[in-house]
Image (cartoon, rainbow, N blue to C red):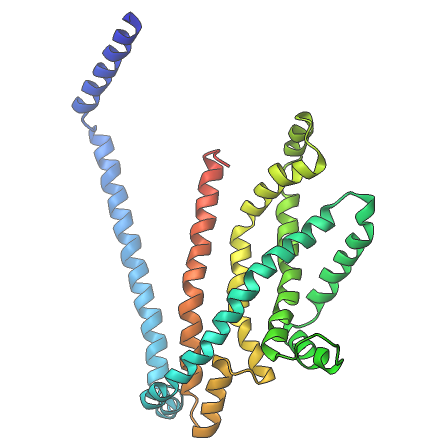
Amino acid sequence: MSSEGSRDGRGATSSTTDRNWVPSPRELERRRVRRTLTRRRVALASFVTVVVVGGLVAGILLSPGWDRVQETFFDGHHARESFPAIVDGFWLNVKMFLIAEPVILALGLAIALVRQSRSPWLVPLRGLAVVYTDVVRGIPTILLVFLFVFGVPGLRLQGLTNDPFFWATVALVVSYSAYVAEVFRSGIESVHPSQLASAEALALSRGQTMRYVVVPQGVRRVVPPLLNDFVSLQKDTALVASVSLFDALFTARDYANYNFDFTPYVVVACFFVVITVPLARLCDWLARRIARRERAGVL
C-alpha cells in the first residue's frame, strides 16, 4: 500500500512538474531555427517542382508538332468512342490477373519449399525445381505465351482444352511462379539461424520448424517484393494481345487500325495506371510498416 502511495506520489509530482515546465530561451531558439529551416526546404522544393514540371509542360505544348500529337493521341471523341469496348477488354485482363495470382503464390511457395528441402526422397524434385526456375526465368514471357497458346493445342492431346485464354493464363503462371519462387526462397533464407536452433531446442521436427517458424517469418519479409511482382503481372496481362485475345490492348489496337488514331492506347494506359498506382502505394506502406515493426522489436 505504502508502495502504491509512493508511486502515486511520484506520478503526481511528475505530472505537476510537466505542467509547470517552461521551455528555456535556448530551446525556443532551437524550435525557431527548425521552423525556419523547414519553411526554407518546403519553399525550395516547391519552387524546383514548379520549374521542372512547368518546363516539361511548356516544352511539350510549345513543340512544333504538338497539335498533330494532340489530335492523334488525345482526341476526346475517339476516347469516348473506344471507352466501352476497352472496358470490356480490360475486364479480361483483370480476370486473368485474379485467376493467375493465387495459383502463382501457391506454386511459387511450393517450388521454394522443395528447393529448401533436405529430404533425400525429394532430391529429384529439387533438381527439377532448380532447372525450372533457371530455364523459365531465361525465357521472355511473350515467348511463353506463344508456346502455350499455339504450341500445346498443336500437340492435339486428348482431354485438353484449346482455349487461348486458358493457355495464356498458364503461360503467365509458369513465368511468374519461377520469379515468385525465388522471392520466397530469399525470404526463407533470410530467417536467422538462431530461429532454427530455437525450434530444434523445442524438439520441433524439420516440417514443423518450416511450418510454424521459418515460412511465416520468411513470407512476412518478402511481402513488398511479392506485391511488386504482381504489379508487373497486372501489366503483363496485356501480352495476351499478341495472340489475338480481345483484351484492352488488342481492342485499342483494333480501334486504332480502323480509325487511324492512337487515342485508345492512351485510354488503355490510364486503365493500367489506375490499377497499378494503388498497388505501388500499398507496397510502400507495407515496407514502411514492416520496417517500423522490426525496429520496435515486434517482428
